[in-house]
Length: 330
Image 1: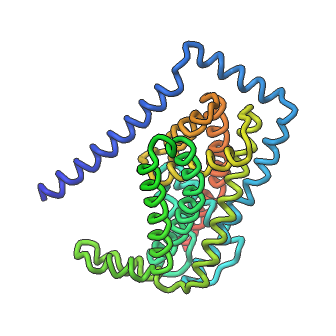
Image 2: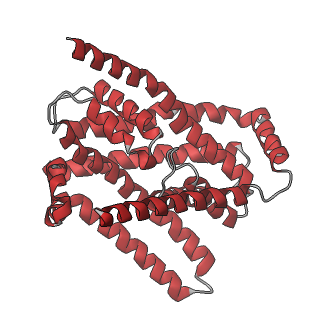
């Protein structure tokens, strides 16, 4: 009992430390100038008066496309559990998005999608949801490797060729390992089953081994499609806020940002808000771009893609609660 309590205390302390460190670094990075708020006000006014303001509209139009890719993924994944329409899959994604908005690492996403299912074995959906999220992570790693390789070669090759080659090799190994695990999900289930404390979880993850390699490939392509939408949205917002780079720098900076945001542990209660901003400011800072412009673009991306859809998703959450109450009464 004491061991369990000590372990929980250490985990909680570690998460709190990471959260405080992230907030501190973000604070230090933003408030480097004495007139930060005045500067920021000027940035927003310039963006609102820019002839490129229509880029916000283009970015907003891509929001349903972004979550449409995710809904299609869940539509394919959910067929192993019960028949569902694409519309119901989209609704489940929106409920999951809203609940995930207020939970660390979007854990509420699991609860939202599970609640939308009608079958009795709802918790068996956890494995299906995990596979969908892991596919998105693999897509982020694959494209992010290209972006980070650009930075590693550009800023380290001349002075540190050996370190550069080691880092590139490490990235390639990470890509290979992530793909190997994705296409051999049964092995992941077997590993969980072999660990005694985790063995009770096997029944909830068993479905991961039910997807064929063809289905996994479909899911990966959909994940890459969704990633492309994210990439385009971020670049459009960077252009709006006056970040001027060549196409390779845009792609490398954004993909590198998404990579770091995905692999760095986060305990933020606002969908990893903070980690992405720090990563973006660091990478684009290497390219000589002003931090506040990059931060503005990153925050706008979060607002349009996460905050606004989460608010809309409240409608579906409310409908879900009303339906649950009616079923209880009946």
